[in-house]
Length: 171
Image (tube, rainbow, N blue to C red; front, side):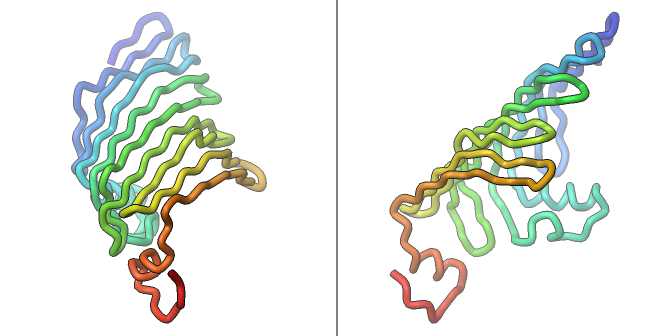
């Protein structure tokens, strides 16, 4: 941590907790302008979710009500002002297990502020199926969403089977 004439600089060479590692730099210039780049890697997303639930004093499964496992990488660029922070983030999860589904691929590129998330690109895939989405999600007021999604090679029967849904005639 460094400070000089109203500027703060936090350099994280390696912070490790709950099977996750954070590295990077965060700055605050003139006690107002935010900057920096942070990198987050988790060997197991499930461990991180459970640790956050514990820190927040919430019961297990309250934040993510289904079991999640697998590695996650996040790179975030900080910007904006102290009163109105902004984050540009890119997330990669190459092989998640969500409930009984294994091998789910997820990628996200987004900008976020206190008032909205601008989703430039979300990609998710499982087996041959894939979904791409983009749009905007408001975080204030009515929390309106405007999203566009495209599905490729979606086998409804496979998805229902993976979710243990039976008795629905779908192919």
